[in-house]
Image 1 (cartoon, one colour):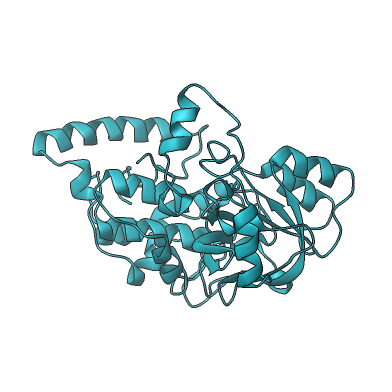
Image 2 (cartoon, rainbow, N blue to C red):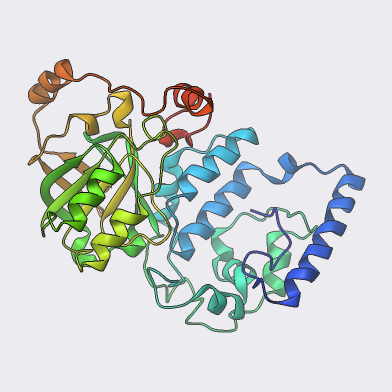
Length: 343
């Protein structure tokens, strides 16, 4: 938080405002160099906490749980994924932006943009400095909320919790991520039978052939950082499920990731991933899987004894790519729980 000029985040590409921000950004960089102010002096732990809160208040993108910890690591800051869940419980969702909500990003821009969001959240934010020289408190004093439905107050928020939840359980001991702002209330608790696929392509083929029915839990594995390799986003399967009218009656679980367009009980970043021998690699067709977003639980209803027996039989599959940079990447990349960074 604080690494761009106020107003930059939501400024429309077609507006002259974008050109003015570009000019102001150049001037700000020169001034920062002149004063010897470094990126790390702005990218503090408290600044990252602000960034997490703003993302949660906007409805949350699951990719933030990858990007922010990875950026924080390079900045010398430890940002555990559990922090996202801790802050989500105390950060209300104050906007409702498509595809999970009612408004468009340009509506957010016309309502005052991120400075107005900061104004609404001010009591929850750390008063850190920004690259433009202004502190969070200065930015919020100058901001105005032009539409109180697009950017609501903490008291009138769309939801009492933020857009992201971190789930844990025997299926994801190190955590999994769900965009709870895009899940209807009746789908917040979901139990179904596993339909298991070892790639996105195999899952898509089954979905398009009408083989996925209400009550199914689609498991797409070997698509994590190591297994992908590269952790593809499951936009096609989730879009197809939604387009078939199954977004409230079919769940999807993956060690891959999602796009911002995901709707329904879709749980990603399952860690450890299948390629590491995570429990997701041991799931069999027809197993019962239970998801409870309110309680932050994700469980494979299989006994520890049975899982131990399955583990003895499990063999790591051959890598999909056997030469080049992606081979080195798959050997060196960390779990999604740590930002999928190179160790």
